Length: 322
Image (cartoon, rainbow, N blue to C red; front, side, top):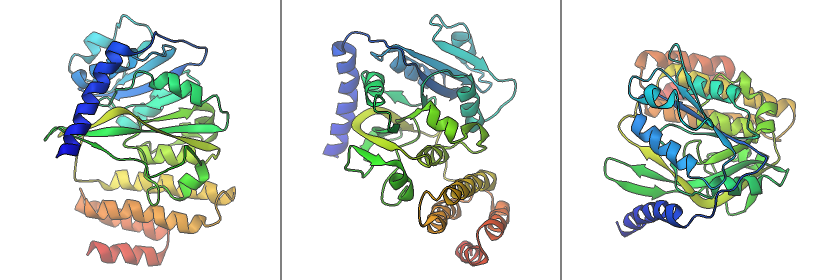
């Protein structure tokens, strides 16, 4: 309990400190693009937008993709006073993943940050520090730490990435992703070099959840910088948390991991790519079978395993399901 109160107190005071004592605004030639899909979260979105404009580094653009919100979002942001915020309203619902891709396609920055509309930053020096870190041309990805705020009981929890080094070989990170090493909480605590996403063929992705984005970036290689600073807050609340997972989402996730496996094997990025593939499939399948949201979709997922992995793996997960 004392630790939780300390974390909550620290998160609050980071906000106060940044407001009162942050250094003068800074600018530079390198633009950061912040991609934000949004749907009916005007209040949370506004906190995020404010936390971006409070950054000391001011050369950025916000690409706000509105997935047909019916709250105040369109009224406030369609003619926003600061032209660095670029507002795009969909004509049909696309969902968070395709909105991320749409925002990326509309962006122009050298570096990319993907945010959900209920995340927010508490470190006002964060963007400036990203620019300095990316001066090392070997760094393709920066992963930072964050708080998770459980709003139902108002608890702030900090989980580190379990990586002691300041930087790590990206293939090493990928090879032990979500096993030895953790991934950041959501995708907003990460910054990507645009050239890395281009090389990773980000525009071709059909599944753009946080895991898929990280794996795509890591497979290109180079180095990942591990920023030990806590830069923001990821919220868990009744509107973004679900215990049920549907088969179509899982199949897209599995398909994305299959494509990454094929790339790793073709380019001989890791020596044990088949073992890595089985391990990553297991992470997805165990999560799905523990949180099935559509009983009728289980057969479709199992059939995908049979077709794309092996008969033995199919039998293993079929047994687990029963």
